Amino acid sequence: MAGTAGTPGTPRVLRAMNDRAALDLLLEHGPLSRTRIGKLTGLSKPTASQLLARLEAAGLVLATGTSEGRPGPNAQLYAVNPAAAHAAGVDVTPRRIRAAVADVTGRTVGAYELPTPGRRPAPPVVGQVTDALDGAVKAAGLARADVHRLVVGTPGAFDPTTGRLRYASHLPGWHSPALLDELAAALPMPVEYENDVNLAAVAEQRLGAARGHQDFVLLWNQEGLGAALVLGGRLHRGWTGGAGEVGFLPVPGAPLVRQVTRANSGGYQELAGSQAIPELARELGVPDVPTGPYPQAVAALVARAADRPSGPHRALLTAYATRLATGLASLVSVLDPELVVLGGASLTAGGEVLRALVEAELEELAAARPRLVVGGVRDHPVLRGALESALAATRDEVFDTSR
Image 1 (tube, one colour):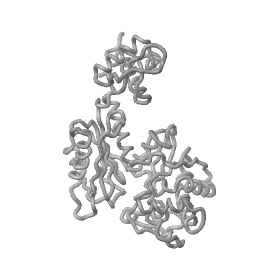
Image 2 (cartoon, one colour):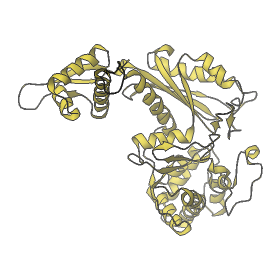
Image 3 (cartoon, helix red, strand yellow):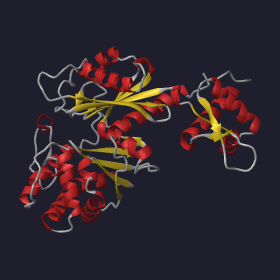
Image 4 (cartoon, one colour):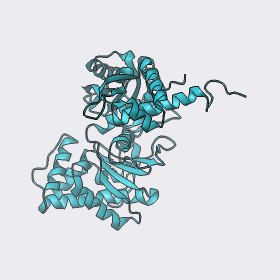
């Protein structure tokens, strides 16, 4: 009995699979000829020609020019149409909201930053998010309706059972139980919410130091200390979205913090968080310790320490590495990851010098032996992860030619 249209194995579905494979190749390699697409997909020349004609008619690919510098006649090249779809990301911190829009190829076409000075009562969150998004959309020369999907990254996580933001008491205005409904009503596109460190891990997995790795931990230290856990290629979020909130972790060398959610801190945050570094530097006699603002001043201090081979600065970096390894030892002992990525300004500023010190300390403190690497996505990794997450879902929707 013949299957109906849309059933796996039918010509319609097979065509859609070939279409998606070709689009993914164009995203990966850039402009390709019909012959090259045929070779990479295993399709015959006539089938590849039909595929490209179909995608061009659907507005998903464009003829972009011809190949040059090879024997024989120049071949027509095809590329994904950047205007086929757009997605947006928003990165929220207590100090600012940064928004960006990318076309379907992943190129950022508009960005905007909205300062959010800590004043109370906090300005309405819905207005902040829409203003930041509208600024990025305007910079891209688009309208809100042109954005297919939005991913918002915040500290903490929205509890899937209650819809309320947890683990981020320092983010004023974001804790109303009606907030997600209000944002959904104000925005004309699907909106997803994700922990900011998880989004940095998405960026590292797709574009940075964790490419090709299915099991890794991202240790993040910037405005807060946290982690993202990727297991079997997927983010592990936990029952309430709080997996990776390691700033609350009790650790030796720091006082035991009780009622951690009220304090918005814990032992590991107190021991190795960004705010602990200037105090540690003063204790070790480092001159000219900055007083702020975070995280730029702390990152500059760590970078200077990494550049000094001896003296108080090296003592600071060594002590900081020990503190980092103290909490990291608990993580790797439980998870035994293949890789640990060091991310966030207070870690990446130390570069390979800090990485080597942390790795040496970790080998003393934990039985597991993961490889440590410095994060490779330095330009707004949380926002980049939000865009990558939004683009993945957008491409699945727009590139599905089986409908």
